[in-house]
Length: 192
Image (cartoon, rainbow, N blue to C red; front, side, top):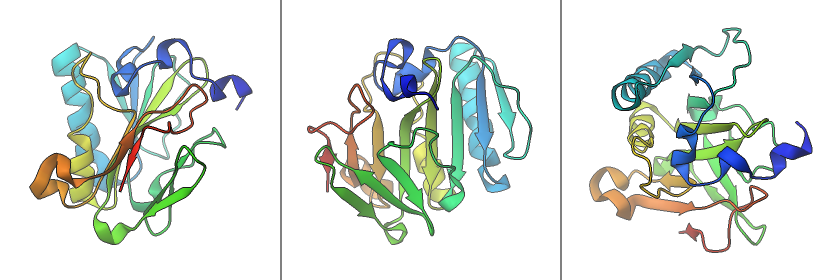
């Protein structure tokens, strides 16, 4: 990946809803058959609310590079690494999530806590990828509900939920915040 992807610019600016500013159709890549239902629902919602064109693609499907933004739907450790090597959020086997905070300190969240996450990742040519991820199908469904479906709402760039969110809503947030101009986590982000 070129160094230009390391700087946030143009259509990448803004919160999660920046994903909706795309030059072409959305590609929704689901990384297991267990993710298909969530990917299909995201596609339906994009069509219903925005009349947006989206293509569903399995991980083994050869998809030509498109000018549109990418939506990645994954469970457990099936999430591919970001092509941007310095990206601060990583999923590692057996489904743990690690965030490098604004001070460079790694915060680890265990799969035992029932994790769900939605976050932006940079791509070439001012494109964006939004990752919708859960430790299991139930947690993936929780993350999919956070998919931006309205512009101007002001969602953070990343939201990490524990299983408490099923009962307590926002009180189940484990971490959330914004990325800076170099895709680093800002100092004002929230972590538990």
